[in-house]
Image 1 (tube, rainbow, N blue to C red):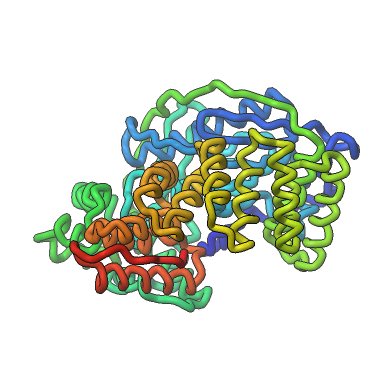
Image 2: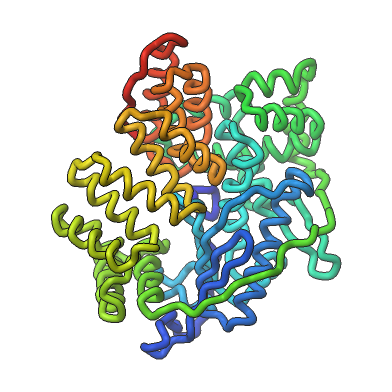
Length: 499
């Protein structure tokens, strides 16, 4: 979850006094579940079929509205996972009853959990529209800006999180001020731009420090877009070409020495422009399939383990385990259920199960991925793991994680030429994922492509998500130092074995 100011990456406080309902599978008295796929979303929901399909179209509109920040022709690839519960009270079972939605990052992109019957872009919509917009903006902005200093990444996501579509005109409104962030900077002040540039190197920050950085990042982006739009646009254009961020900023704002002075008046007066644009057409085609009972139990297990709230971890795990056990009663070889269970299995048992799943489900890429992981856990990096990785990537062509896992296998066995193609596919599918960028940097390094390895390593460090642990940030810095100090145009291949 995002650790943003005010919302802390979570969702709307609920005040209903109604008894909580439960998002059960139909065999236990729940509503039917279905999966709806649109051009850019995979929606799993217990809404009625018509409402579910309409919600998928609304999400396409949500996405299209955010993309207007980079022009009407910008339309990157990729699919976002969404779990939509039919009633805000359904989520109370998985939390402490205070949240109507949340968003997290997964190896394949954001997972957004929502509640209610739709209308997410409307001003009075249930749930937390801003959390969903913030996480989706992070995901989409990476396609437009392959390099983003941390303050730009967080500032843009916060700037875009107030997106709204007017119900009457279908116009998209971008750039409205965040009331909570504006109130914060008016009350507590803000960091200078020089201090925000230093954010990249800071670890072990307190919640208060993070709040100050997030609010200040929003303020600076909002201010620069409104007061120096052409120059900030030029800055973004340079970032889109992969230029080093600080140099790109200096070039874009060259000759504008006094641009920081009016910020105090900007905060006090609160005068700014907003962008109102017609919503372009969005794809409306959807495909729907009924979900099996085992699928529903996996969703429930996922919600028990992921959802925010104060439910004790031991209780979460107990309930998730019960859901997985019930899923196996419904389908003993259900791939996703078994994948979740194998995390606690002994290595030999895990490998035996993975082989069985591949035998029973030879066209399911997740089974092949599980087999590859089980072989890897045994220390087997032979052709058997390579075959499993290749088959998983083939069957899951839209999974950046599957493509990256294959590429990383080739890093480990020092066969960089084989890894470059799947690495490139992973980057195209998810250019904002730091681990994916790190894999490509390692392959460049092993190939002796020194300049590209260093540039990609810097980009990977830039794109570390706000939730990345300090250990990961330190490791990415260490790898970048290796590329900068050890790699020369004539140096032989070197091995990088940490991701």
